[in-house]
Image (tube, rainbow, N blue to C red; front, side, top):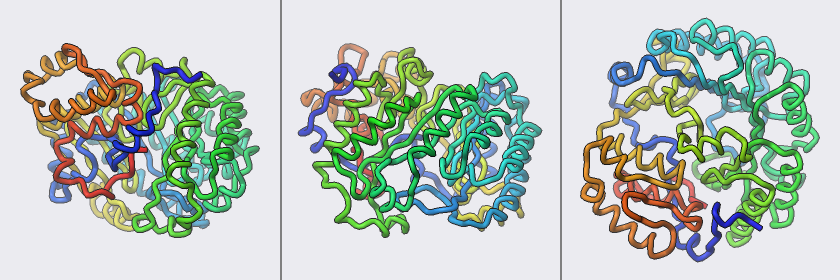
Length: 463
């Protein structure tokens, strides 16, 4: 049976609270980023507020994909022309040198992630070159103790490729599976036999990768309750260390490729909820821990351990164990978090390239956090990572009276308490199993920007 201490499924509550809301990979969220703030202002404030002795996290965005997956909402460039990669990498190196000047300070890089797009779009020599450039600009670890991860398309990698990826220093791999059913795969233009994913996972284990993550998506066209249960059973058999089970948000007006997906082929809303409930039950029954939102991990995985020890963190890469790291991101649309600053690069590839050619950087917009932002960020982070908040620690850290400062929010939460989503006992706010799936809705209570910004379709739905 499902561990009742992890999640309690209450359909009435889910239907009542399933609004659109942020994923809180940052607070304030990206819609608050201001294009009027200059790169000079943002960088200066970042340098001023960063802990220059703390370790770094690096993110590299590789935007290219050979094929378009119709469900995808990532910032990508669809091309089969592999020659487009090298000019982009050359510009990435220019930006990298500038970022090194700004932030490196011989700070050790404890976390590295290549995302996209499809990082495996670039060839083996380009991968080696990119790592060499990173190593010459930043202090990469060479002891395999960092978390160095890469996203892989199993259609563009094999056992030999995995050897190269391990050899150049990666010890974590994430692969998109989405669904193993061929009818679903054809409907989203991602035909990927499960044998390809198996090869990557088995190779990663043979080569000593520390962790394998797989991504699944529920709510895709032609998915049924039974077909997705079969997909989850197969993934459990492959035994990845972590899983992400994402909700497909059908927004064809915002994402052109989604126009290929017909509304009538999508699962009915009530079936979609059953698919999610069954998936959660299957994973928890198989021994996975519900980390939060759409993430699961084995009990001995670092994410689960960090959560149990109260050390889990969240940033633009999702749940992470590296709360002490500034995040230095490079590439088109990449988002950095340096001290009390978030900023994002140009979203369009040509605009990114032009900006780097002219300025050696491509910062487009950002936000400088004030005290209220930092306070609310800490509250939201604690809730979304640990389902618990010690208000006394918040009072001590920010020199406030919590009940006075958040009097309006606490009134709103009275309904949550009445509905069994949470409790407040003394200084401890605790999210109950019935509230864990709705944690985004609970966090929205502390979001000072929601009342002004909530438009209904700015964010994806919570469930």
